[in-house]
Length: 134
Image (cartoon, rainbow, N blue to C red):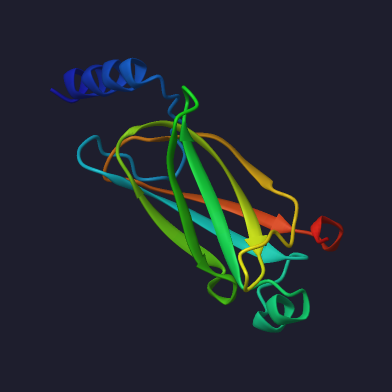
């Protein structure tokens, strides 16, 4: 029975165009999943750095593998993480820190290509080094 479930799981992920890394992450096919973008500024999570660098929020743009924008998601800089609910599928994204007026304070950081398989939570850590700020 277990081999039949494994074969079905592999077939479903191949249809979705996703590659599965059988590492420690929890993977269950069903329902929506979450992308958690977890950021640092110069490798640290210090709210004072947000204020010192003039960063008020983060803007995360998520697109499908075909290039269609799924959404533009935001969170407060001081939170250092944003949770984005996504349907199962293949995506890519980028993140930029913004000032209080919504203008970019940094260059965009590429989140790379990733897959949401359903009922999973994918953590993507990124860093905004000092030289990424304008």
